[in-house]
Length: 369
Ligand SMILES: C[C@H](N)C(=O)N[C@H](CCC(=O)O)C(=O)O
Ligand SMILES: [Mg+2]
Image (cartoon, rainbow, N blue to C red; front, side, top):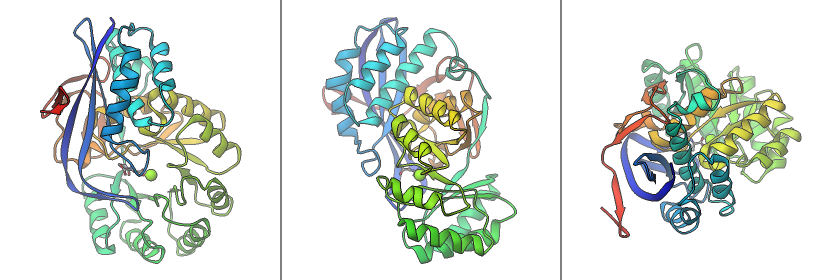
């Protein structure tokens, strides 16, 4: 089976409620879908959202890199030469991690389809069912308390609370949420780079002294501030997780080697796809560090690939934040993984198991249809 073409489409799903973090607010899941075609008529599916404030990728930049730089190197390659394909994708450009991820996901999907097995089976095997947390967007405190209550009613037992807008309000937000849900759900905080290192130590101390139990605090300081991450990690009891500071295997080694983080949030859109994500899981394992599998605000094609990875590396990836597809009003992807509130079921079809996708807007002769 040889790669013959790479095509593109857009896929948009409205959110049930706007998704708000310290970095951005969005109302739709907007994915660029990548379709890798073969001479046997089998299609591999990948996708990536635009996250300019996190990875720098936009639909336009991804389209350009894939069409002009990656595609010419991949057309004609046999799908069973997976490592050679991955090497070409990873060496095609610096950065552009979401563009690389979208193509890699499609290539791994094809590879697993060519071997007629689910992707997680070929990556080592693991559970077919996973349980995700849910994100509580940053909003006025009463709204966040109500959203947290609703999430528990919906069956979630781990809440990822978004803060990072204003430190005094953030402390009040977390105290108020903890007060009403403390015995019913685990709380993880995601500051999305909104605080300084000193503010973080102050805030976590305030929360710990008030009796608030936190599972972890994610990316409190700017992504480049590794000294700040280390300052915090060495001074608070609550485990510190790196997200925007942890894109590449090299960065993860630095974070863990120097004690700048306790936990790593792996996202395919930051790693450039599955190959580096697998390396990061191995690195974390050798440091006896835990990992979360995370996602951007993205739909069920890319998130299914992350779920297959999490299944196959469940010994080290023991925290799951793959709620993107469940935040949408519907899932346009048929077959493959299903995302029903906290429950993710991988499906048993070959590759990612995707059978069809409704509402794709293909790109034909440079025009979105
Ligand atoms: C969707 C997921 N639960 C999440 O919160 N991801 C964010 C980034 C999402 C985005 O802005 O697209 C994170 O962990 O920082
Ligand atoms: Mg995060």
